[in-house]
Amino acid sequence: MKAAFYNSCVRDYSDGLMGYAYRICGDRNEAEDAVQEAFLRLWKQRSRVKSSGAKSWLYTCVYRILIDNYRKSRRVDHPGELPESENPTDFYSEYDSRELVKLALNDLSQVQRSIVVLKDLEGYKYEEIAELMDLSLRQVKVYLFRARKKLKVSLEKIQPDLIRKTGDPASRRK
Image (tube, rainbow, N blue to C red; front, side, top):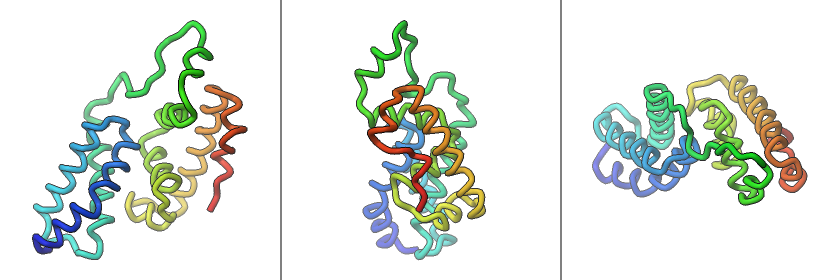
């Protein structure tokens, strides 16, 4: 891999990687650090990474960096965690649907959240997700099914009429 191709990778994939990382971890600084670390690793391993697989390699690298960070920190408090309130409906009424979905995503495991982000928000195909995350196609489908089911339950608890407005996430099969 030559410097010019590396620079084009940075230019072409930075925004997508940043969005992906942010949706997984929910923290802009952590997402930026993960993306920067992935590009640093790409540069260090440029002789081993094929140009045709650079995008896939970068997404996999960002995912693994975030998983490693999560395992190291085992955070007690998550960004977007709900504060305790005497009347939960008062709290939820202040948030729009997008924020509530973010809160529900925080209830998912790191793997489930990554798969939902890749499939439903980034538009990846099952096969691409399996390759990126080093999972079988069947595992990806099972994780996604269970994640959507869990999202539905979480969203129904948070705000029952949200499911009616946005549709059932468990029914999105493509």
